[in-house]
Image 1 (spheres, one colour):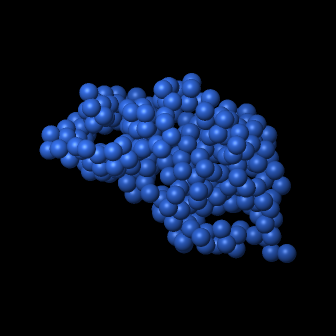
Image 2 (cartoon, rainbow, N blue to C red):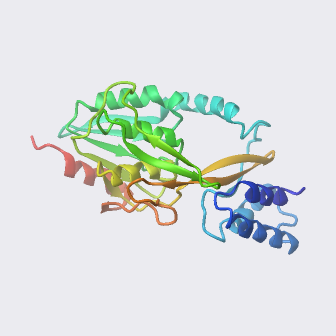
Image 3 (cartoon, rainbow, N blue to C red):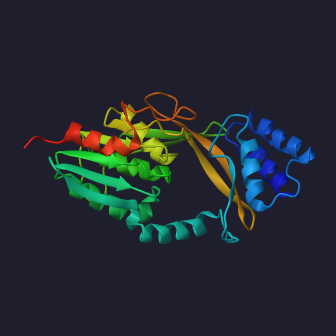
Amino acid sequence: MTIVEQVAALVDEHYVFPAVGPRISAVLRRRLDEGAYAGLEPEALATRVTTDLQSVNGDRHTRLVFHADELPADHGDDAADAVRRGALAARWAGGVTRAELLEGNVAVVALAPILFPPAAAGESVGAAMTWARRSSALILDLRRCLGGDPRTVTLVCGYLVGDERVHVNSLRDRHGDLTQFWTSPALPGRRFGPERPVAVLTGADTFSSAEELAYDLQQLGRAEVIGERTPGGAHNRRAFRVHPHLEATISVSAAVNPVTGTNWEGVGVVPDVEVPAADALDVAHRRLRVAP
């Protein structure tokens, strides 16, 4: 079976929308028959297949990704990937890349490059939020956050609400089954709480679960989103190794926000205050700081 045939079969088996999956795989098979992929090296093949995968409905989570370094044989295995993700989180301080107090008693906490799983991120996120509660307002900077674990979205939201459980999101799979995400009364460290103002910064690189965090807090009425409209990736995906240097990622579930009943797929998170991402921090700071 060729690489393209493998990807088409994975779409047929796993794609979140059963009525759409066959239309996507049909594009790949037609293009394969036309010779569109003949003779392409892995990197060029990844680019062309991704274009065709996204030609039906623009799903940015469904891709063929080239990796210059060889993928491990167990890439896509949940347990093995969790170990590798944990090692990466250790090098990135659990994904908390900035914790700083600005003039006017405004705290900034930046999360990047991704939202690591709670097992790897919980201690760092808890420490940052416990520290931030001393401030009068919080800026949560997601401008360089590329996505990550939806459970960590729920974890972060938990620090910004009260002790009650709050339903922040659900994921619906191809069979129509829902997985709900609720905040927990018990968290590492102490809450920032539900009263003080919060701003979330977004940009063109804010994607996937990082978009979810901005969207969920916006729809809960808990934060003002400041920055640029995000790319619009609201699906959860699985990864499959189809070649030593190629990874197929397939959308397997779609977000369903409990407030709106929909999500940000294709349209992005629309900021409450739309400014260039480079200016978002200054704008948020001016809006939140306490006068001396």
